[in-house]
Length: 319
Image 1 (cartoon, rainbow, N blue to C red):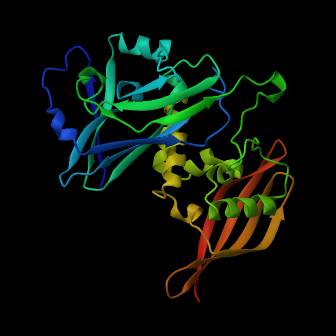
Image 2: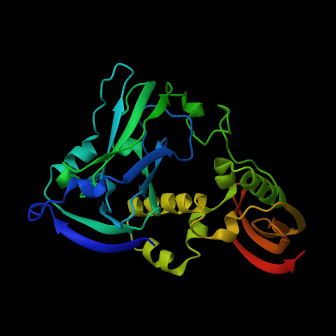
């Protein structure tokens, strides 16, 4: 089980006790793209390059490492051109690392075979100015950036950055699976929204699955998460949403909403101009039986687009 403790250190006063780098020999680090889109130069906020980062303990012993709340003190992205020229870091990360400040971090413990994952925006770390093909690697510092002599490297990803689109096409959205066609929500009815969301989950098409989900509203269903969410900065809220989506994809939380039914039937749809419910019977296959459940998805309309913002589940027995 993952155990996290919130701790604090001052960069200047810390750093005398060195840790043996061999303690992290069995730590594995892997990266992949999260919610892949069409990528363009610049615009880290409107066209981010989200990377899903996973740390795994492959040793028979407990693995302990530090993870800064501001991940720039735990990670480095290294981006290279086809000519092996390395791109420069952003001014933000340079400024943070050269300014004396207090840095918060958690100590993470992983037992054998356990993983810890989070999501970062590559463009917060690296200034990507030109369209081209790049190669991306991640360096992770288990004892934080102050102890750079201890690090782990990830696998390498290929990043294709296309020329910036015209202003009319500047609304960047996830692309459809195995195509270059941009994916955007459509003005469809609540029952179609629910139907498409369930089918996307059955096919593991995560970009399409999240298309009609109000992820923020789903996160706020958890009272402890809600208390934290309403008190933190906009940057930390964005990080919480990214991590929530990553946890959903790995089925670590809210298992009912990401469960994969073998089949389903939409039983009833009721809605006004702005609010509605869609009742669905779903069957889940097990080796010797089917489990039957009734889902009630709550939907609401924003700017002509219906979104799922809440749900409830009732067990209907087995067949």
